[in-house]
Length: 103
View 1 (tube, rainbow, N blue to C red):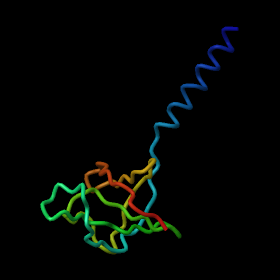
View 2 (cartoon, helix red, strand yellow; view 1 turned 45 degrees about the horizontal axis):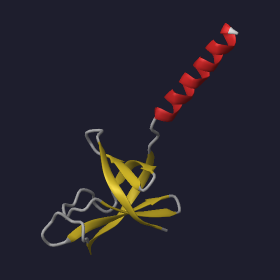
View 3 (spheres, rainbow, N blue to C red; view 1 turned 90 degrees about the vertical axis):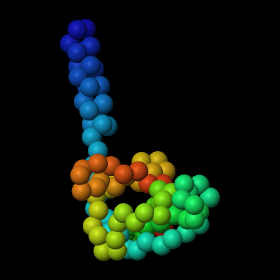
View 4 (tube, rainbow, N blue to C red; view 1 turned 60 degrees about the horizontal axis):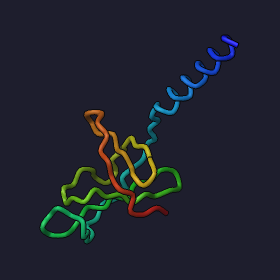
């Protein structure tokens, strides 16, 4: 009985550890463009939308700002979670973007 309990505890711990690991994929910034954004903190009411290619998928991502943070041709490390896209910057810090389109 004790062995079974310890085995279940060990397997549960391994599953938790595995789910916490974050795997990043590589993508390429195709382009960026300015688009209207009603939620923008910027007085212009615009935001920069980035087009990120990963394999055959192109994500459109934004974070409600007009500040340009990536450039066309740039290779990025990212992960996707629910409706968000997390880009790993040069300081190994994740920057959170909203996915506004996907093709």
